[in-house]
Length: 127
Image (cartoon, rainbow, N blue to C red; front, side, top):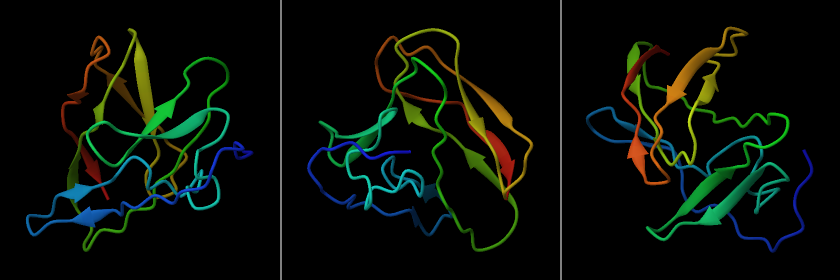
């Protein structure tokens, strides 16, 4: 994917794990597109400053899909609960996950948030 021609600023957030084992994946810590190489994203995915601090990932749902990836390393294999904090401006939106390089896709139905921030129900994933 091509980078947009906007000004360059690196993502200042990293994937972290707290003492309780909770993993936080900041929106702009993607490995594809790489914010260090494409600081503003590309034609489909934009990295934008958030009013709450940090950055957010804006995904343009119009047109063909665009993958984005995060590389997460866990201390030990096991079951982890996944949830996402997001905004959905319309009905019937989904997120497809592929874990551990698998070709099998996990389809997560996203709640219609009426354009307000909300969190998905946790989904148990084997990592």
